[in-house]
Image: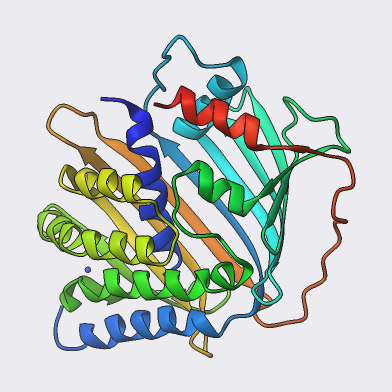
Length: 316
């Protein structure tokens, strides 16, 4: 089974869980998580920092992949990531530094990234000089991925609302008895609510995920964020997923905003596939404060479409 088939599925699962352990009191903690996810729609600006640890196995070499795409695939499928930045929803702007490291930290790559309305700028050290960025119009990305609608600024502005809606749908499907308040607040004094994935509830949680997944995929497709072909593949993938042991945790501040989210879980993808590990942590700060952006929109750019076509073709 090709690893690249599952990478987008795992990435989307992580994204939805990030953007988004019994008695009668457990309902309160589930309601607090749902309320915090819905409150994400009120966020217009924020700073963020996070990390991820992925153990997805070795990427397959088709014999046609470029050295660059193979190097990137190694960092994506079995690496350590960290990132930080600042973002504004309206007007749409994001600045971030993404660091990708191999499992043994022998290879490290830092990618400066800028999103300005419907343009992405990224510097890839393996290819670009320091002052040169690849530039991509998101309409072109939509066409390359088979999307049927343009990724307009208005549609991108709505991404947080969509992520909140889909995350709420997913958490709402979980049994309230699985939610519990942690014994201690986090380092910043925020209430931490946890969902433990155990041997007793992993199958039931898997079934809850499978039940909601087609609806989530349909929502993404209807909002122009997923092409018809991709939607069909990801719906099929959901039938083979199995959650292993792990934990989801959400830290909520006194104003009801999510300040930190963590997902740590094992994933199985069919009877013959090895167990894979995903660990993602995302923290938010300076919510709705005036953002201070420091990066200039690059003047020296190259089109990113050729690189993306090469990477997409090598993953088929």
